[in-house]
Structure formats: C-alpha cells, structure tokens
Amino acid sequence: MKDHTNQNQSGDEDVRLHWKTELEIKDLVQPITLRRIKIVRIMGILILVLAVGFFAWWLFVKPPSGERIVKDMITAAGGMEQWKNIQDGNFVRTHRLYDENGKIIHQSEETFFFKNNKDGHQLLIKSKTNSGDNVVVGHDKVGYWASLNGKEVDPVPLAKDLEFMCDGDECSPLCASEMALYRMSFPFKLTDYGVLPRNAGTAMLNGEKALLLDVTFDPKVGHDRWVFYVDPNDKLIRKIEHYPSLKSNVQPEEIYLDDFKKEGNIMLSHSNKYYRSNGKILEEYLISDVKFNSSLAAEIFDRPQQLSALNK
Image (tube, rainbow, N blue to C red; front, top):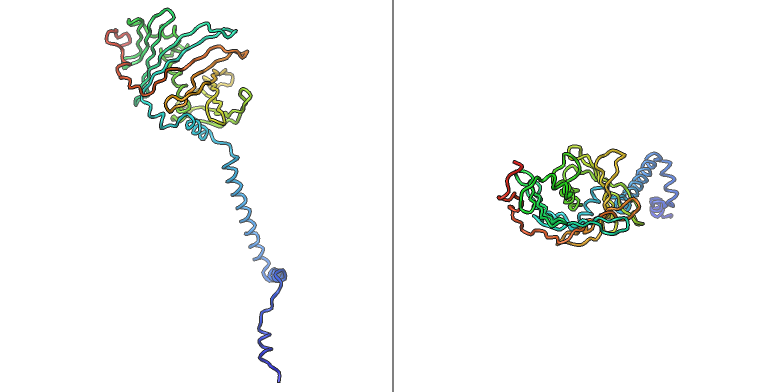
C-alpha cells in the first residue's frame, strides 16, 4: 500500500520561492500598497540625509550671526561677567599728533576717572597743559564744571580748547571724552538695548581677512553706524569705522586698534591710530596706567566746595 501520510505531509509544506520572485508576485497582488511603502521609505531616507546635511551646515558652514560674533568678541575680551565687576577706574590717555614725516609735533595727556552707577557712570578728566596749567573738567548733580589752577572757569571754552568736547554746537564739555570711554568699552557695549549687530561678511585688512560686523541701532536709541573689523582667529577688534549718520555719502572716522594687553581680566587695545589719506600716521592715542576697581570716592566727581557754582 502507498503511504498517503507522507504524501500529505509533503503537500502541506510551504514552497520556498526566491526573494526576487516573491517580490514580483507581491507587486502583482498589491502594487499600489507596495509603491506607497517604497515612496515612504525613500522620503524617510531623503529627510534623514537632508537633516544630517543641515546639521553639518549649521555646525561647520553657516556664517555666524551678528549676535554670535559679538558673543565671541566679548569672550575674547575677558567675558561680560568680568566687565560688569568693574565698579570704577582710572587710566592715562596720551595724545600724539604727527607731521607728514612721522615726527611728533604735539603731545598731551589726560587722566580719566570714571565710576559706574545705576544711571550709567560719572566721568572726570584731569590734565596738565603744555604751559604747565592744571585743568580739571567734571560733571555732578549741578552740571558741568571746570577749574584752571584751582580756580573755577567756564567749562565750555576750556573743554573746546583742550579737545575734551566735540565740534557741534549742542555738544557737552565732556562729549569727546565720553566717546573715548565708549570706544574703550567695546565690545561689551554691543549688548546694550537697541543695538542691532549684523554679519556683513569679510574684508581684507592689511593683507589679512577680517570679519565685518555692521552695527546700527533701533531708531529710539541712535542714528549712527559702526563697522568693526574683527580678527577671525582671536576675535579682537582691529579697526573701527564710525559713521555719524546713516546717509550713504557720509565719510567715517577710521580707528586702527593695536597693542592688545590684559588689564586685570580685560583685554584692551592700548594704541588707537588714525592715518592720512596717503597711509601715513596722523595721530595716535595711547592708553597706560590702567587701574580698575581702584575704590574711587564718590566725592571726587563733585565740584570742589571752594569753587563757585557757575552752572547752577
């Protein structure tokens, strides 16, 4: 007799097909479903590739934002925490004027005293003129005041004569000195309210590539413009262009920064240079004898009692 049991067992066994043949059969049975699955899989792979590519671009290729450049500049200069820890200080600023042959034809120096407070800061300038006169120009709750050899004088003509103030009719006796202190506070002041930093690409400066940071302001804050040439390696400022307005035909003030050294934990430029159109130096401001947190008494900024209150 034939063994039907073995035949039944052989007939019940699954037939093994080659995987390509199996796919062809499935395509014939469910072609639409399989196409959708394939499309979804392809889309998933594309999304993954795009995500990885975007992440790599974000990390390694994407140009830094203006805010990112400012953050890097502040870190290079010592960090915002260190800057905020400065309560007061003083330093000497020496001004040198050069002739076309590079010879010094005039030199003067002023000592800046400043004290930070909730309203900003107070500023006092002391100077000794070439003729030996002792000059002090300050500002207190009453207003601006000045003394010449211990006697009170009108601060406006004295400040103009000593270039403590700007040329404008509405400028204060210490406006040029305030601007000098403001420039010294870069890059930390670039985080103030209303500052709008923008990455403006790159430019060549003295044969080296520099990052360009273009800074404008909210109209409620200011209407001027600053352009910073930043070393891409150490993130320090090498040149500053200041445009007093946003008009396209305005010529900027150009300042070249050099001689960076640490004062405490703050990295400062100790040389600011201005050049003639022929490339020769015109003038230079040197910073020295810097003392931060020197515990200045608040009274140092007040008008001395022996002086009359000229600006009441």
